Image (tube, rainbow, N blue to C red; front, side, top):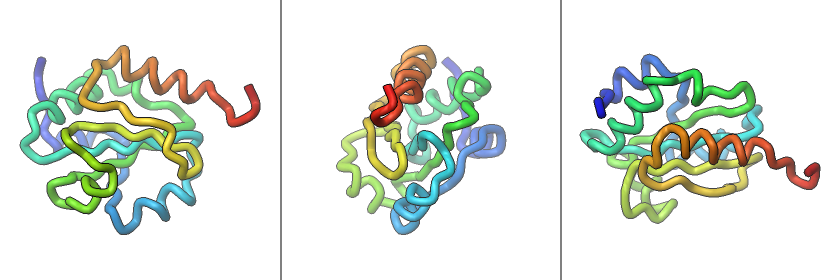
Length: 127
């Protein structure tokens, strides 16, 4: 599988950078139904594989009610500590600031999209 550089990914995919100091504020004022926080690291081969998979079919990973956030945990180690990371990449999914779950490593495009679709279909108390 090919890999994608961070620069290629950040230029081609709609993802907003966050830090350990502004994440809570970003989540609190999120206009999205779900927020996906992608935690990655520079020169991480598995992270680059995930980025390449997302870019290869980027339309599958863009939903009108989902906002993507990202942070390089090597540049922001407090983010890694906050989430108790033991490996990257990892994706955390939030709704209205509440963590719904995490996807560890890269499960592949189909499994990732299926997981997000399931979470998008769940409405707190609405069925």
